[in-house]
Length: 400
Image 1 (cartoon, rainbow, N blue to C red):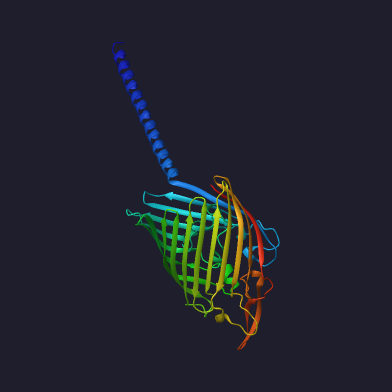
Image 2 (image 1 turned 135 degrees about the vertical axis):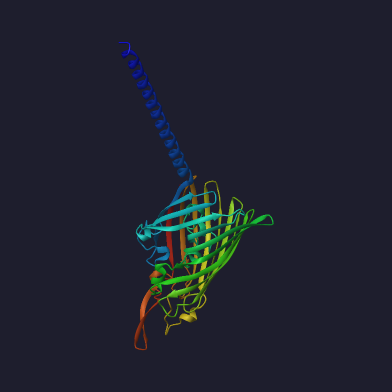
């Protein structure tokens, strides 16, 4: 009996010690699991905090008084021609590295989603930045927010200046450097890359494809108080299936200015496009003004464009090439800032004064067969059917 009792005590002590050890091991495992969960939550919070998502939308309805196709409208009411929805994703990889993806869906393209921006950027210590990928070519004062209708007072930027050059985005690199000059800041943007011309433009020229290779140039924007001044120059080599165009050089020159004191805003830009061969050389400019009255901003705009080298596209008889352009456009409208992130606009634009050219209206294009050695060639010429057009439009412009 005496020998049994110590044995029982020893067994009890061993079982108690083992149970305590098992309990302590379970607590350690539970603590490890909590630490892992906290680390995962911190990483998740960091990822979420590094990502920002915003977007914008333009819901536009328009109608023309004829079927000339000015601004993409005809006599039928159209809700899709200028409407679009877009989302932009910004991810801050590090303090210096950021990636940006902007996706847009346009009504005129059957709402197919396309990447407008897709690039990575690096910020240097001296405030300079380099970006690489799919970028917006900074040809105009409003290039960075060209499709964000909420960003400007008018219904749309001048079609005569902004739409006759068929390139907005390119793939390549960009260097941006702000420099203090006097009491203002000069922003320098240098670009290099390549892109493909918009299909609608190549179709209007009866050309299978046009690519711009070795795009190179720079833009300079100076801001001082209420004044913004801008200039740029870009050059590129054309690559095409058409022998007369392949290897040609194209140049773009732009000048612009804007004065905005909070109530009044006056803006103007001039552009010149020069291309070797029979591709049109075009001079365009506009001047626009708006006055803010509370939540309302009425505006007026005058735009003009003309080709400078019609003799290079001279055709026999009385035929005028469709690419020969001369037109003046008068626009009046009003913007109503309905809320902090939503604006409603109404606009009437009348284009006229074609001076015997097509005005570059789709409805004025017809094709004729001209004889050439061994056969004939189809050439787009001006039908002269439309001598003017008026477009009425309204929009809801939203940012979020």
